[in-house]
Length: 515
Image (cartoon, rainbow, N blue to C red; front, top):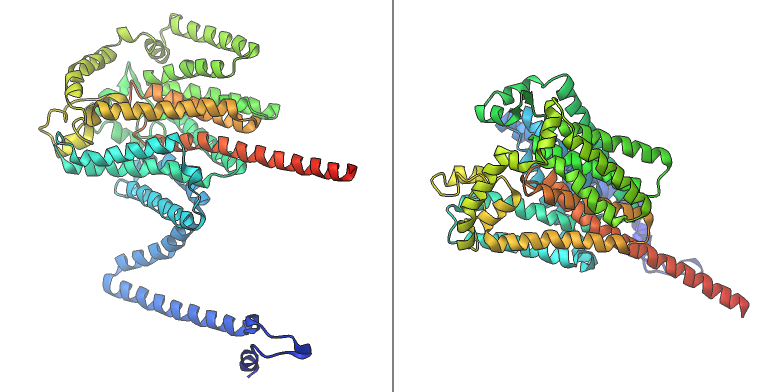
């Protein structure tokens, strides 16, 4: 009765003539209504669950458990994308390791689903904010152009299989959209710090596991994989030693990620950090380089000295040049010192490509395929080479062609038009990184931008002898790196604008007091 009385009195005048407002609705009634709704939903869920279990047995139970876990998880990803970003970065790092032990788990589909959830959350928020400035810029335009060109490949008259295009464009399109997700959601220095800490921690795990493989040995599952196929054994057993791949799919992906992590640590050392933190980063950089050698990937050995040259140019000081001279002398000694060590010999051979049979074979293959590239401006179609080419068009000319290079694959599958677009995109990302590095005033953000620019540079060099951007986690982390180049500059602009605003207010107050 008291509740009814309160509702009936809505709109009447109270004591002293004060009118009641809509807030006079009983809070107790609202709570009771919510409890009733929750009770109804609980009963409905219980009935659905019992029906599923009764009709489908164990499968129904699994569906119920998946719904209980999955629905809150989906909500969290959409509403709190920062959590989803960290989850994605961790999952991308461990994805191939998990698949090594759980063959039938569709984790690739799970990653695709995560990306769809990110995109859904992005458009929901953009509908409210309507602020597209964050995702504008030359890099954004070229990424959209690249995605459009990938979609346009469905009409490629030279394509042998539409299914190959379907399987390839799914990963290409969704992964490239991650750039916009990262640019939009990474808005603070603290979140960048968290991302980099997670990255370094994951790299430490990968390095330690590589040490385990080197000095203790492979697990039973890994040994089974190594001997499962003569082709695998031939690729991974070289000069009397097994190439290590840590938690990744292959030695190339492992080595390229260790190279990127070492460059990340080297660039962070230039930031405003305490001495002990710089020493730790220096130790980690050395650790990552050390375990990288276990991979036996000669293409990765060139990345560090080449990128350190860019590092010296960007940080051109007397101290830096002196340091680079010492580092350069060290590398020269490593390259030319006589050795009987198999690992060191393979490292040295990376700087003598003309003596390498595999390098000469790749040059011959590239020379052979060049007329095809020139005569097919749109290429042979997405997925026409490699695994998908063999699966969907095994009798085609390109199915048996080994691209052995990210750039060559683009040229063969997407033509010289695609190669031009791809190179223009990479150039734009690097140019933006260099420009932003010199424009950013905050020392911490400058070191982050430097790290990302160096990593993009290194991976692009590595994309010539190998395919650098096709496997997890590199295919995810590349777009994170490209996004952070944009984000660091944006945050610095916001920080400088806030500082100027504070200074203007202070000067105004001083002027008023003086007046």
